[in-house]
Image 1 (cartoon, rainbow, N blue to C red):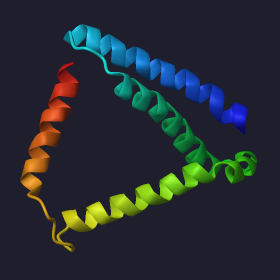
Image 2 (cartoon, rainbow, N blue to C red):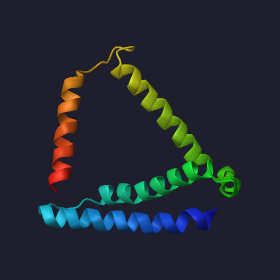
Image 3 (cartoon, rainbow, N blue to C red):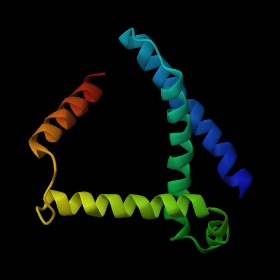
Image 4 (spheres, helix red, strand yellow):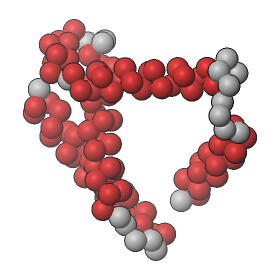
Length: 116
């Protein structure tokens, strides 16, 4: 399992760091070490998530799932958080913040990402 997850995660993490540094250079912004570390770790999360999804479809990969308890726990927390967020969105749970403010910031982020 280590090789199945480690090497692709490193490659994907380095690719994400390259894109981040390139974007910082293009936008003439300084890059920050905490952001780079987070981006590198996101590569591991992306690949681990892909393995979890694919292993539910491909029987030969299921043997590796037992070694991925951390990713299974993170996946469970994610499903829980998204479900709670959906309940907020549909008004079944009262939101402590104004959703229109959140939507405006999301639109700004998306438009900024598209124009970059």
